[in-house]
Length: 360
Length: 278
Image (cartoon, rainbow over all chains, first blue to last red; front, side):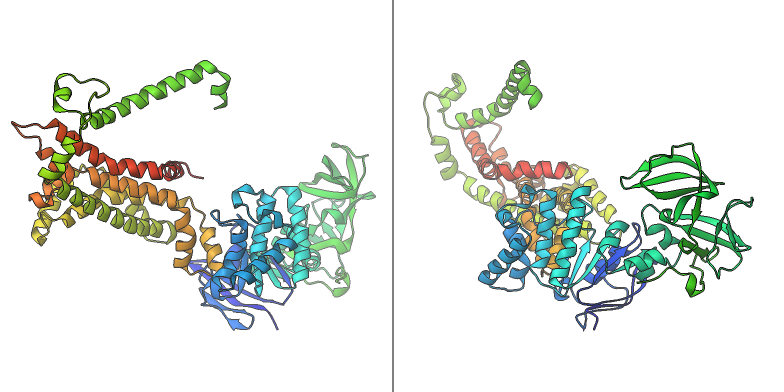
């Protein structure tokens, strides 16, 4: 049975709809990432689950109980805030123990639990300090610890890593993933960073303008984006998206015949929006002429930025050092790596199953 | 700091200026205290910088022969009531306008500041008329209410800045941790606001304790006079007892000194915290 169930959850402010009908079942031990650009409603959704925003419509169940109209304190949740929100006037020990104390746990039990969690997060030596004496990474650990001690049904994390520098962010991301597997509780994680979403999530919920765009496992949304928005949002570097025309079994990018790519079988003729990931394009002996305008060395890979006709495209190659800005090379694509979307609705076009990339 | 330590001359100049300013502000206070302690002869004819002979005769006569103790008590009642009401009301209003979606909250805040800009006398006369209508004229309570017109805008304005700078997530974290809204406010917001609360309390006390204008308009009878009013009435046409006045003034200043000494740490914190947003 689902640990957390969102049934048609809605949020409106006055006449403005911030979140429109989110449906989601989260299993025990599952890590769900809410992903989207700022203002898409992902934080609002999380805050509705937390009880920090009232729910305008729909129902919310946590651990089988209807908690739609309950206070945050009665929902069996714990939350980690973007700015950590540690109580500045309390020691780390008191910060960690506060929630337990509020729930009437005895002093001895609280101390034991705080020590356990502090050890798990390697912050035992910080217990008697105040939050302002801690570094960003340490505060992040304490914030996680404050959620962990409570042992709730679901953990809610609102962009927990966005105040950390890049290196620390990657390390904490790994730690959160390991921790979550170890404690085996449901977790809802909000971020605007698609890399975080891809690396952490069991399932990603991609949102835009208050609407859920797609829900799926990381590789599922990567391989089969349901619409143009998801296609552009998931993946780094971004997917190349451009208007094109399908005819005579080719995908035409421009007026002249040589600007065309092979097309997946089963694609209907007519105007489409085409999407090709940079890694699905490759430099070949023959293909479309590609005017390289910039070369970015990423270490193990090389990113070429250039133009085909009037479209700017990116091509990801394995590491190579023989192409310079200003060169013209020829590129081609694997037909299976080409995504086609309806020009009007921007939805993914249905193709015959054989042409789809394998799912696992 | 670092530039000053690298250039000793600038540092010396800074110290000299600070000392000059300190002397300039402290001397009248010193003179008031020393005058209250020296005999009349010496004070009027031949005042030296340091009194040669000390006496407590003014304090005796002030406390034993005048209404001063009664007035002191009146002042204390009014000032403390003003402080309590100011704290209670301005905390609620300031918290409300920072944390709730209230229609026209900008107008509330602006209106508060606007009211603060009126000279007390302009408010005192219509207020007096109103108090007379409801039968509150010449009471200490009427004085408390009129003092609130000065202290409340200040308190709300100040605490508004204070609460605004405090991240809302702290309360949300407390609510997730098991507090009610009120519990989060009492356990997290208030303890963190102590510097601001102390500052507002001191200012409210100061304004009420030293007020002369409102007391002059509101209070008629001798029993209800406050200290500033009583002291002023000592300055008669034929009789001017400087010693008693200085002793009275010293006693007026005493609670303020004590409050500042005890609470100066919070007070300075509060001033900077309210002024500079984190």
